[in-house]
Image 1: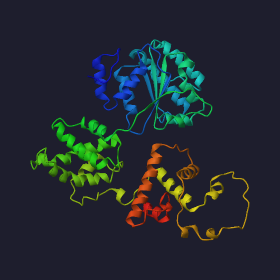
Image 2: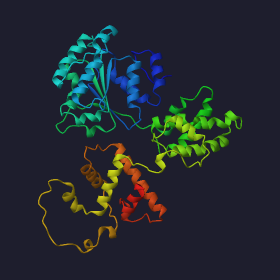
Image 3: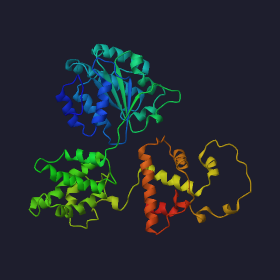
Image 4: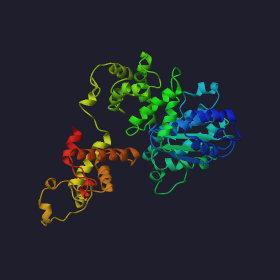
Length: 437
């Protein structure tokens, strides 16, 4: 019995939709109940958020295309200004017409300087395309970029149904929570839907759907189980795991192809794939070589722990924000809290000069060692030393977690004691030098 039910759409269409969006049946069911029938007015705005690779964009594209609902899909990173964004929506709206009209109007781009012009042109386009009797969906992917545009863009999109008096629903897709979107002046509150991360069981089910037809499903499922057992703790990105699964499956099948083992001989298969998975572990998320070059490296007779021709083993480049996080952590560890206002504020006011110095401050801070600091202070220093605006996304907090884990491993390697207040959150100069190497 299918999990998706709707009185308007046929059961075969819903069953096909369910097969295309595995492990997201509950979210699709909620969206179907909100959408209702074609001619019914839907919710004015919907806010969908979740971490990277949680299926937000894919589910929305699959849902709208499978049910053949009129929609406009725009990436806010690609169209980074309000004018480009509004004009692109109007251009895609023209494609909702017939093919003859589309060929003659596809090259025409109507200038749209402000949101008032957009509302007027949008109403005209909806009437000319005969879309006033059904819901039109405007999907804005990477919607966090709207915060960088004019202050009226986000509130206007949330109330677009009211402003145009048309049956339109605006769907915002983002990686950050709604509380970071809400303007200080207030706005229309959208319907909020959360896409949780895929669990290891969900990843197993999704990855097993791509098994090659020449091998059994159980054989490929055993391979995916080994792959997730190795990479799940360091990588939960579905796209990256799919890439790794395709890249290393040929090595997993080698004993079977040569006749040295059968599909159920898991011990021999694991011994054959283990050194290659260790190689792949060193290049997770890195794209320094192509897939064909990686396959050629797999046939080399070098040591399992080394990859020839990769600069990643001589020089490891940290992520962009991790560098600033290390600098901010170092500044917070070796500078007192009372100096933050003087160091990181442009207009800090007058500072009273005094020769009074506490007894323990006469000693150099580097001799005393790093001091603990709260997470809020680390983020405040980070925001002040980075030029552009930094959103407190899950990516930032994951990099903080990675740096703390590296600090923990370095302390374990040097047999340091992990108890005491200094371990709570400190970054030493030796640790930064070690990471820089």
